Length: 509
Image (cartoon, rainbow, N blue to C red; front, side, top):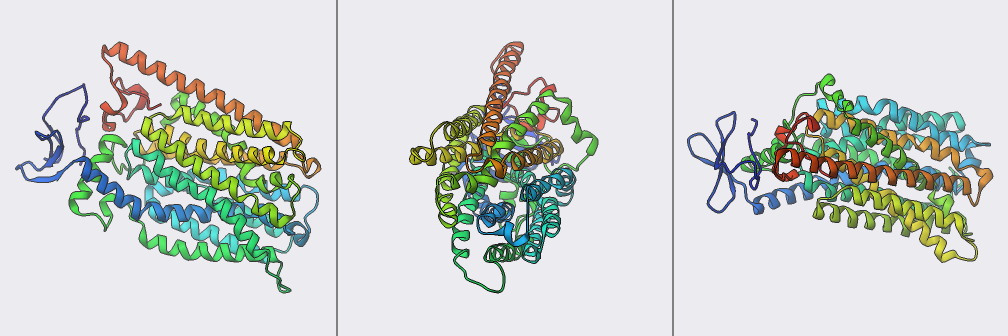
């Protein structure tokens, strides 16, 4: 079923009845509410704001918490090496020189190589199946770290961990775009992504607790991987049987709610809902120069993101606390990062602006790094610790809002999956840069690493402002050519299959 539906308050048309290909119609009632009816006049659903709010609440309660917990485990399993390093991982495994940096770097190679393929599999077979299977795989890799005896063993496990986690975040983004309108997406994705910041905070607390264990059987840090790996595997089994493939198959929705969910996606998310994947059509997204600029911004985002995620315990260690306290002192910055992410995401959805909040995040990162490099940490402990807060503010928000930004401008589902499955892993590939600029020889100040990270943040800020300015200019140009002002919300996404090549297209900036 494909709706030929214009926005209710669109200046393009004031039609009262809009037909669909399968004999259904959208009528505008006297109260101004769209009503979905059959050809013989039977009402299927009244599309009221109250009905939409009730529907999104169901998605928020039934789907969002499960995805958030899945991503929490994903983040824990990816970033726990930093905690383990502070409690003897290198000594237990006999790591020497730059071998620790190597096991961090090797994760990102398969992460980038396999993400597009797993993203395509997710589109073909459903994220509800592929995501739990990926979760089971990376949970198993985490658990097996307890059996690693040397550099070769841990490096092999990190390789397979990178493979199994590669398309997780891109697929979650795509999965959420099949349930939420464009203007609803940022705050939902932020709630989901906040799980990463909470994971970092919880990881510090968990490490603090685990490192109190006294054991002669295995090294204390290995208990961290036992607990996280087992919990991940158990939750993946639950998610496999719980998550619906789409709103159309969700058992917790009534037939009327399923019709409403389909209508919402047709007019404000996708050009064709649940469209079959076509590789050639999907890769046409790279005909647009803006896609390449988005990838450049992802690169600039990746270095600060991975630097903070992987090395925050080492950065905080410069404050002079012992290993246990260092892990504990990473909790507050990570929690504040989650709070700032939610504030910026809700503000972005409320204002329907994306790029100013992405730029603000890059600015936070730049300032946090520069302050930490430029001051005497020992004599200005409070200022230095506050700088670590700014680092987390500036890495969480841009990661979410950048992905929402370009997904909002792609109505073709296949192209959306392809760009996300390349862009997100590309940002994570920058972990190779981060893991090699934080050298033990530069400890505890890490000035070259922090300066390099700040430079990437500044470049990302500049590119974001350039892209946002272009979108504003191009919308004005298109309106001038059309002879009237047309807003993003005035054009249903079913007309926007070919993106900027469509005359009615307007950028969601």
